[in-house]
Image (tube, rainbow, N blue to C red; front, side, top):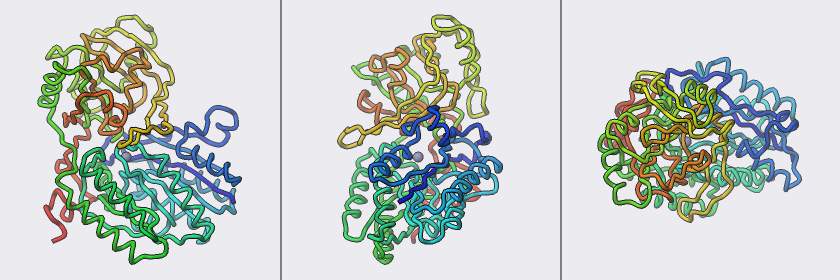
Amino acid sequence: MKIFSACLATETNTFSPIPTGINDFTQVRPTDIANGNASFDEIPPLGLWEKMARSRGDEFVFSLFAFAQPSGLTTRTTYERLRDELLDSLRAEMPVDIVLLNLHGAMVADGYEDCEGDIIEQVRAIVGQDVVIAVELDLHCHLSEKMVSTADLMITYKEYPHVDINARAEELFDLAIAIQQKKIQPTMVLYDCRMMGMYPTNTAAMRRFIHVMTAAEQQDAVLSVSFGHGFPFGDVPDAGGKMLVVTDNNPALAQKIAQSLGQQIFALREQINFPCLPLDEALSQANTLSIDSQKPIVVADQSDNPGGGAPGDATYTLAWLLKHQIQNVGMAIFYDPQVIKLALAVGEGSRLTIRFGGKLGPTSGDPLDLEVTVIAIQRDYQHRFPQIDLETSKESDPVYWPIGDVVALHCQGIDILVGSKRAQCFSPCIFSDLGINPKEKSLLIVKSAQHFYGAFAPIASDVIYMAAPGAVPPMMQQIPYQRMRTDNKYPWVDNPFV
Ligand SMILES: [Zn+2]
């Protein structure tokens, strides 16, 4: 059997003024692997699929891995160039038996509101009806009828933080093989839950709901159940929470389960959003809690999460900490390439006077003039995203993200990690890798909405979600939608089903 695979992914914040161009994509091609410049380990889940295919004796070809950190619209030429490279290499590899795609689901390009629908449709036009097209998606996706009608199988992550990237990839692979062998015949149904929000899956209500989804998957003829949360900062007509159910040749059952689960998640709508505090309240509470705590208090600066398309250089939190003279704090990861250049030039142990952060836009706050010491430097750092089961704490193979050069600065009792690329903070190992013991800090402030949770929660005494000023504040009703309808969705309408 011949399996073709590719990844073309980014999560587009359509409100961000920073466009996504060709150089924003980390790109790996077969030649990079052949000449040792990259390895399959660096391109999940393609690396996993390659292993699984090899262990079965299948032929595995991959054409392209292209992933960009979330920011604004992907330029038209960038999208078309990468898409056409994927399609051209598919044409060259034909005939194939299975196409496995790793797409995000919330990529938006200039002129393309549904990039994934476009990619799958064009892949289908090349391979015809008999080849299996199976797609793994982030749960922050805009699921569309075009995607459902052109793919054979789609599965989204179930967990936010995304600690099940490989688990879902494995399911997708096994089901794609079974489809190709005609052991099963998938039918997919989408159900619009008429809601938009951000739903961390470590809450009691979401844990219960995930159990309900996995229990539904145990029923005869049910192949897969996904809840696409939607991505609130992607303003497209297909945005919003949707239930996706795949059955074995039983569309009526798929419809019934999708509707039932869709209604169940809708009923939970008031319980499942982030419990966020405004900046002053969040930091005051964190500071008070830290006085009696043996372990750090972790505060998530959700509004400046580069993973949601924010610049990563907002200074509001740092300014508050300096003003209140809070000591023994670790912060990660600021984006300030100019400061990185200065730090690399002078080296570890040197002192610098810098104008820090607050550069990329009006949501970043003011730059801060600081005296700092460069305490550590890591070149070409690979940031580890641990894949930790939220219930059993069992850890599977981690995912690594190349985030460029990282520098640790010390300033008035605060250790600040700065990167040369925009990147969110996934794990406290970034502190340890730069010689800072995160467990000894009173406060750890992370620029991340939720992906930090799996690795930080075990070392924290408390986790506080903060809605500071910034580019991606987790407050749906403040987002100025134009393309997504709000008159048929919660929280704009209390119950859009009546
Ligand atoms: Zn996501």
